[in-house]
Length: 494
Image (cartoon, rainbow, N blue to C red):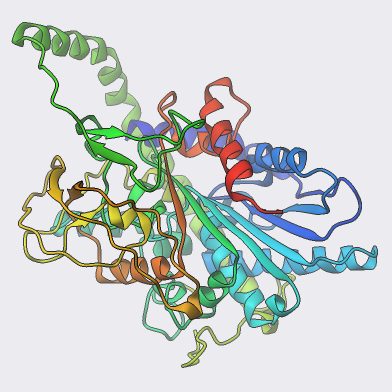
């Protein structure tokens, strides 16, 4: 809850100047051929991605790249839902391409980058572009996400209290909240929007499969908005007991970017300190935190009240904007974007905090025998199922098991799955998180398309969600600068 209050203060200060924020377009050489769209996240604005945009421009100056940072979803407009946000971004893309064409510049390539909620908005937007035949004349090159909750933000927990928590959290962010917690019913599909977007027959998955490169970066700790399992599209969390494993970093990008093939390995046993040393350390830590606890007793009720009050006001405003949008009075012609969502079985489709709504919840795991145990293979798009005898609802330590990773090819129509797991004689395994059936289906469908998945270990700051893309110009966000450098040097193709 303390992190919730800090995040509220951060967003209130950011949104205070929201009216002065303008959309950004960067076209340094006047010969645009490759359009790169950077989509911000919840409560965000284009300036959040200014460091990324500048780094991208500096890296590829004079190479025909045009950078677009959509502005139509800034601030609390992100409450209006992924569908509406995606339609707004799509219109901005089409307008930008038309403007460039009038200036004699023809876009031949497209790259999409999404940060946080922006990753989901980008996935929706490319589905619309695909349905309009865009990819028949424009080559889709890079699709990248940073700390984007592809599986939603529902806390993987069991029991009535857990369901109550997820229901409560979903009510604080209007339509977007319902969609992120997967309690919405999207149009006439009878399913949550995120489930529809991950359907193998949907325009969204087919659009995603057309991109030459798909890469994601997911924080492994200190992300108070979107935890590892959802950003990494994984049914396990190998980093829940970080002290029990050895992190393996990519040379040149340590200690931030983990090796996606073998992100963690067994840790050699360490000699425990004496009982006296441990007790002394614990006592010292507890005493140092007493002033903080006293402050929280006063601030938590105030912060919670302000957060809920603001959420209620913004939800009302969001519903008003949605009504205008649905009535065609928001400057967007709905006829261009309300198209069939399925390729084979066309179905009509109803509109339907996230940061920190579930940050205080602890992940739980499925009981023994009810689901497979996830291994490191889940980090590299594996779909092989194994049975296990793990039983625990507390964060257990991984155990070792003799195994050998096998390569596996996915549906050729959806693109090949990138093989990132190396053959090893000893491998860690982790219990399966208590996800929903819809979330397990999302993982299978998204993994079938194929991704390069990079776990990110940002540990200098307690707000890795902002640091991963250097959302502010702060010295302690240097680890995020290393993430952007890795993306530009290793993953982004011009």
